[in-house]
Image (cartoon, rainbow, N blue to C red):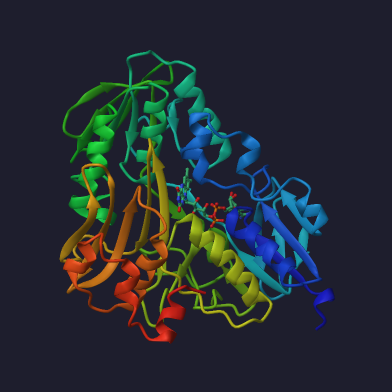
Length: 432
Ligand SMILES: Cc1cc2nc3c(=O)[nH]c(=O)nc-3n(C[C@H](O)[C@H](O)[C@H](O)COP(=O)(O)OP(=O)(O)OC[C@H]3O[C@@H](n4cnc5c(N)ncnc54)[C@H](O)[C@@H]3O)c2cc1C
């Protein structure tokens, strides 16, 4: 069928959805593009919500993916403030909360993820926060700037990326912070104890208090408002507010009710193949909600990172247009905390690696750390060192043994370790 008469519907007005709409137009698609989002805002970027926007350094206008007029100019029909509540796969129709029915020829699900709840007594009290949406960041910013009892800390449950970034923003604004984390260190599952210790030191130097190996047992309140927390180890802390930063789960309810295949429990998400196609050939999924292969024959994994939403949204759009797509980028994440910036590429959960190799000055927090198994680079993290991500990702992708001594030597350019990669390997290392 001529593209002009086709309708592509995207459910989920986040980064992946917005990038998919952009790519459809950039690739010359002339049919209808409909973008459905249950938030009232136009698609926006979430990373600033725990960093510059929260700390008051970035203005609201700066977080949106596209300028306000972009959608009309590009004939992208926005349905905002309206959830998609059902997919009729037989009739190829999406139903919205207000009863509107929208036909589709191809459908993309970019419904993202939602924060996990604490699940302890007191979770319903006013002053228990989550951080996923602009409105959440506005409320949290009110806590950080508007008072609360001066000496009472913000208690953060979870020393993951969001917990740590909010801790940094809070300290920037002079708010006391206590982070309660069941693992023995921050981001323990991702970074392991070695690099985790660097982050612990960074935060402690800025006045953050950590309670590792402990978790919240209850949030306590007075008159319906948070006044403190109790931990499993028996600590009682006063609290001006509590942030639950204990991870996010994929929003799969719509896909599940439509009978699409989901990934096994533990991974979650909508199962897609390398072209981001679900078990229904006319439905695709991308971003936080998708469980991807990331390399032929590999286990399905969800990648809850900004760069994944950005690239997978575009890749899914190309797949909807019938282009050949193999999406297997090396997972990539960035974070900014205080005056420290880092990037992490690859995947090396605790137990998968047998050594960490350091390159640079760990004390000055200007280094690259590599996680190795049998001298193969599984992942790399650069802290306050820039322009190395491409080389790190190529090392990860090459899956070949490297000399750890050369890897640790800042005098040996990382690219020289790649010099003998065959051309095909080197090219594919740049990703799709
Ligand atoms: C506070 C915060 C900070 C972050 N910082 C970083 C960072 O520093 N670096 C990094 O790499 N990553 C970061 N991330 C992760 C990154 O933002 C996410 O990976 C990215 O937002 C995922 O985009 P997405 O489009 O897949 O999903 P989302 O951004 O979650 O968008 C999905 C959208 O779909 C909507 N939706 C869901 N169901 C329906 C429905 N049935 N009908 C209509 N609409 C629906 C949702 O409300 C939402 O608006 C951060 C995330 C958060 C929350």
